[in-house]
Structure formats: structure tokens, C-alpha cells
Image (tube, rainbow, N blue to C red; front, side, top):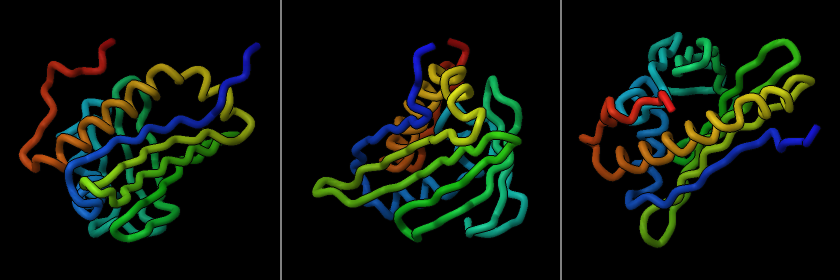
Length: 156
């Protein structure tokens, strides 16, 4: 059996300041407006993202998942984790300044006894979802009125 790297990432240049990109990233309950890879995100407590806060994410083709903020660097990045027996999934969302705006980096890492298997089983959809999220993040950060179209559904 071939081995697969249990880590996926994508970077995208955005014509907006890193602070704006971070603002869009951390407004998680609105992600469904700009990426078809997310149906909903519901924070379990009101208020801004902070370490220890939890959110339930619903995505097409996946069961609902509970994510916990594990790190946050205000204005720059946040990381959240999802745990299950034998599995730890870590998602990182970051933005850094560039001469023409910013660069966003989104990554997902699978660890634990089942991490490699799940990464292998979901590789195609994971890469598609990261691509959708990066494109939607760019569009929303550059144009606050941007909303993805229903035609960009995740049916493929």
C-alpha cells in the first residue's frame, strides 16, 4: 500500500491586508456565505474566537464535527482541532502581509493511529474543499459583498 502524507495545505495571494483576511477567517459563522465546502459553523458560546472555544462545523459529505480553538495569534492566525478515538485533525488558518496585500495559508493535518488512513480516504475531497475555501476567502476578503453561488455545489 502506498503511503500518503497526512497533511494538506494551500496558499493564496489576496489583494487585501492580512488584518482583513484574518477578519474574514475568524467570522466562522459566515463561512457558508463564501465557500460551498461549509454548510454551517455554529459557535457554542457567543463572542470572538479564543483558545478553548468550540464550534460545530457541518460540511457536505461529512458528519458534523466539533472543533476546539487550540491557538490564536490575533490579526494573523488561528488553529483548531478535532479529536476522535485514534485521530487528531488540526486545521490552521493564517494570513501574512505581502507587498501587494497578503498571503493566506490553510492547512489540515491528520495524526493518530487512524490519521493516515483517513487522510488517504478523504484526500480528493479535502484538496477540493481547501481549494474552495482559499478561493472563497480571497473573494470575500477582496469584496465584502461576495457570496458563492449555489451552482458551485460540492456534487462532483
